Image (cartoon, rainbow, N blue to C red; front, side, top):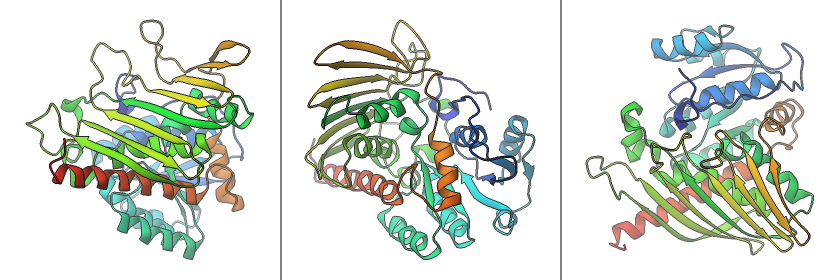
Length: 364
């Protein structure tokens, strides 16, 4: 599979090796390669020192493409082969969204950690089932919220906030346009029952960012809307979504998601985040500095004394993956707490449900 900054489905960031374990100390396998995010998940784990040993997928074509990139991954005949491999500590997967929870349940019950692409669930019932299994088996259900975890400006913004760069965060505005690339998308991509709706899917990224930046443990959904505005021939597609949250600490968020990235833009989406605090602001130009530079990963920081542009591309790295590995090995929660992971997914699904109710009631 070709990697391109112009296609979100194949975008797989690569960073510098920053191993936290030695060869063979943390072995993992990849499975269910339905979404190209599996390449980003794999890159991040390998760069952090994890050892890729096996791969499973029912599609020979997807298997060949994956093994062309990672020849060290030995193909197995069934997913059960991975579950029964005692050396594997984690299984990474990017299955069709409505299948991710059931696959994760099998992984957790087999005594392994699970690292799934977002969105991790498509229903609240799936979430509650996995909450119980994670608590029972003491294994982690990690989620690839890549728009913060695998983007240097987005990660560094969290570091700056922790250092007090903007004071207390009051509001987070997130713009998340994506390129549709409809000719390359599989059928399930246009079936809402399979992907869960645009807010459940893409929106889980934005909810996660808000909770992280604002330091919220929970939030309420104040507003949500999801519609198909320009693709009547694709009735299962929602091409624009938006929602507003109010955090348990008083911070608030507005996010807009869409499939309207123009073809003239050299990247798959001009993702931006604007963070307003009591002592300063941050603007994140996460993937492009339009008409100037692509790719780009930039923070524009302003406070009471100065304004500066912080170039993060190739300088910050991707610490999340090493933290994930150490959390799995040590039972810690440095990378991201399980409660945070599940809350981000839950709130995105609750926002989607509100948008669905508003649509059913005929609201504009």
